[in-house]
Image (cartoon, rainbow, N blue to C red; front, side):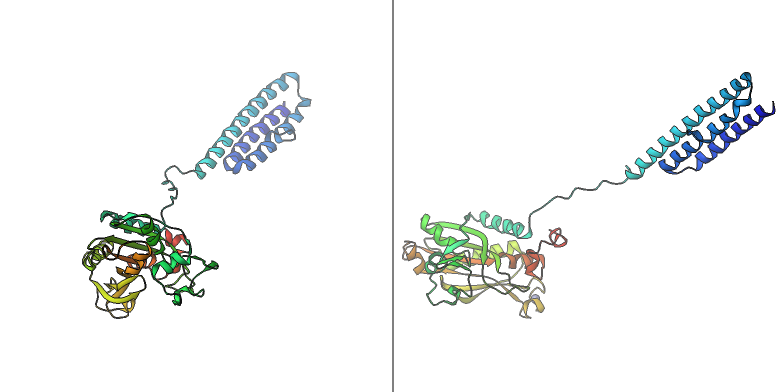
Length: 340
Ligand SMILES: [Zn+2]
């Protein structure tokens, strides 16, 4: 009779110990170890049941029943705890109350953005957009544009030659010639694209850069049209109240030629480091098309006049977005690009 009491007490104690241990068990591995320690083939329950052999049949039945119930109960507790463990793991990973992570979207490069903005302004003035090849021959890049044979720009130290007579265009002006060869006046065109010069790389020079070029040809086109169109453009792309200044300059393909400056956007013309304390920033070159250029494309210089202008797109972008280093456009640093 003593033995059965002892066994019953042991079973009761095992049940208490197991439920305590269960409460403190951590992780799936800890639970599994605990299950093996209590319910496994060599576990605590098996050990207690091994002591039943001296009991009478009737006693064995009573203790066996108690042991089976305990086994079932413990088994279920383990399962339940294991389930909780799994759920906890999932909720730790996904906190549905947190705001979602926004997928990153690509966007246009700042040079493309400003080019599009510039194009839109000229489109509004009736200019057509045209393009031309980046690989040119000397005729389109220099000769047809009235660059004399000995002009320094024709030197291979200034331009990238791919073969004799073949080079990467050093400006977008060849597109003017190619378009005039195909179309008869009147015409109003703009073009944008990459140009290449053998410049040493620094904060304001890069061997590849972008230009925008414009040309308007017709009867009685005068310097006033040039001034009107460019002033309108510059006040649209920068601020409506900027001052625009035209000063005499020289280009082989225009006569007369002008250098166009705007009042410094950094100091509003009062003078600062960005404008060399002059209050003005030079922004583009322009002029009336040289009659010799018209002759090359079989336009009658007695009948037609026109103006042309060209500007660096990086320069416009740098002034508009207040960027101090041209290399930022080419380095693909996302910290820079993501600001646009
Ligand atoms: Zn200034």
